[in-house]
Length: 411
Length: 150
Image (cartoon, rainbow over all chains, first blue to last red; front, side, top):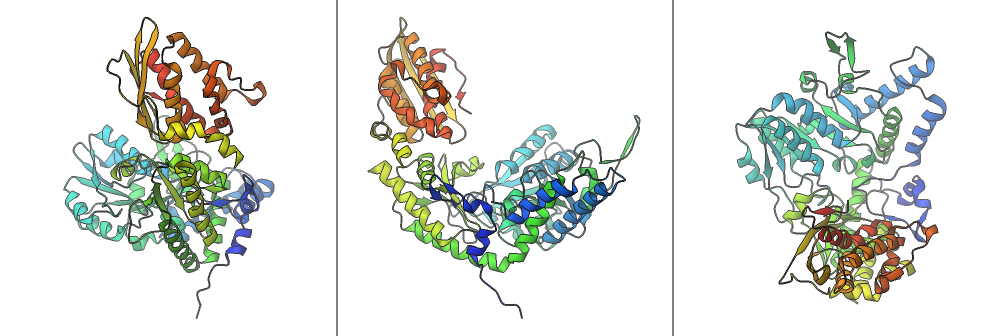
């Protein structure tokens, strides 16, 4: 029987070269993980090794290097499929990130499927990348957005969601875990509502991907999007997973090399999945880095990560609760270690600068979720977000830093 | 920490907590609205200009300590000045914050406004300090479209 082992955080931190540097003379306290995560040596090495010893373009050459690169690229796709429980690597489309993945679906699936009067159902807590791509295609097709409201606790109003479905609803596009509030949305309930009406569901997994195991088939969704850089992988690489039958029926997103079968000036036929959606030379090194990142996370094991992150979140909430004047945005019952807050009398930007002087990295701003900030009546907030390499001391440092900010501005 | 003290000098903290000329004047000849979409700071600058002289200047809005203090101190330093003075001070202030280090940052006629020199050490905050001034410039040029520092 396998026993759950707690994470050896000191050892884990040694895997991340960034933690050997100091910031403004202080040890780095990195609490901006919802924005982007740091990279373990294994990811950095995977990219470096490719460029130093194995680099060539893929699918083009008859020579050994190109063949090796192609094989490594194919293995990365298989790795991703395994990581998220996809039925086949053909369902994995490499893109630049979550944003491009959603744009791909909106532009390709949306342009074909949406007609005048149709509705796209999203939520009030979407990241801008879950709003704007749909707005663009809705404008073009004469369709419109319907928005599931968020409660004061920072949760989806499920009763309202049920009422917002109509015969005109053509797709649901929903953030799996809120990047601003940390809320784990009850996506199974929304998927069930959608399935009952034959409506496909896209889940934005940008935040969810780094906090727990994802099984796209168990989730029952139709598209799943995430970025490599929020999963300890490189920037510029991300994934769109889609059901093969849906992807097959969709027109190409971009035209160019690699995505064709035959080209004549009269007619072009397209490559099979997934290459139909991968025009031009892709971020090959990025896929290898992502492969290494997935291996790294799996080796730590999700149960160990989840136990550690849960303890960190409890510590952070407790520490923040003792700082007078700190107000948290929302109080979702199911959440990951992402917390947005305001401090009475201290603007988030100023608090961010004071924290930075203490070597503490947080996000200060609207977190690319302006409608959600408006919902909570604040123009901006401080966001602290945890990952498995954070320590209880990081949580205490945040609370101490906020006290320092209060001293500076109220003193 | 000393850089932080340079940034948040007493006079800046004072103006951020008790902003001066935070009102809409009875008579307004020029006004402009400015916003920094990055952090949500937003403000409106009101001018009462007669015969080329800024008879009254005031502002409304909300933002961080730097942008609030900058707007407050700007209005104090420009009341009674000419439009040309205003445009000139804009240039001096802008240079104070953005000139390359090797050129130095002469304060020229900026007077008290030189306390914002500390912002130079925090490049991401420069836009906070210049928001009010960009908005002033737009108001002086009677622009009616909102200005943005992004």
